Amino acid sequence: MRIAVIGAGGVGGAFGAALAKSGADVTFVARGAHLQAIRQNGLRIEGGRGETIIHPAQATDDPATIGVVDYVLFCVKLWDVESAGEHIKPIVGPDTAVIPLQNGIDAAERLIPILGERAVMGGVAQISATIAEPGLIRQTGTFMRLVFGELAGGRSARGDAFLAQCQKAGFDATHSDQIQTELWMKFILLATNSALTAATRTPLGKLRDDPDIFPLFGRAAAEVAAVGRAKGINLPDDAAEKTVGFTRNAPAAMMASMAHDLIRGNRIELPWLSGKVVALGRELGVPTPVHEILYAVLKPFTLGVSA
Image (cartoon, rainbow, N blue to C red; front, side, top):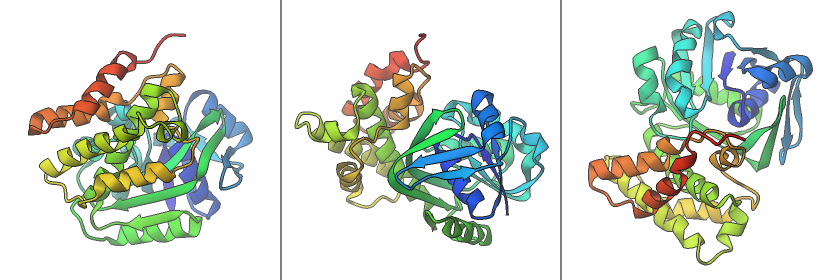
């Protein structure tokens, strides 16, 4: 099985390394110092699940050199979706499955005009991991789950084949016949936790112990769930409660990737998270007061800050 990982950061690096260790033919697409370190010393993953080293690791900054692959784990930042989609055209054949693993809910619909409806599946990555230094991915906790499926629903042979490889790789994986619901369940969690950990620059452990802050998680999650239902997404009645339950039991040190980016002064994915909640809420007539405030507070940092 040939797999290309587009964006070898916390998500792509961790899942790609696990798949490579399981015997899949994996090529990582990265850039800069991270790419150089992977080429020289391999890709190293450390954290709650132990250490994994892929050395030598196949890595490049030019997807066109890879050739057509069976699967693409598409893990670039949300602002790079269209440009990266154009760059991966040479590796997408008639049977290639492209699985976007972004935090938002619209990556797949943005890729379809570029790659075609047949190529694009839906995907959800659940992991807390970040680039600690070039060539090194550090994971917080042990939770590592991948959910994927056909956007129109139902199961497929390519989904079953990828599921088998994921199971061989040793992380939790699900071939879902309702991927739209899965995408929105993650969106409820990420839009909420990203905004609150970023706005406070504080990990979940301290936030959930604060009686003035923790109730905001439930209110913000309920807003996203209400927007999803207004959009016609089939969500469980307790969608918001499930999100809060995950947050209550998550590792205390966990912070959303957007919070890490903000602290580092980097660009953040706010427009596609709380910004998307606010925009859809206005479009659909659903009030989103908590996300409106969080979006406004974080908006000045959207493009990052100079050192």
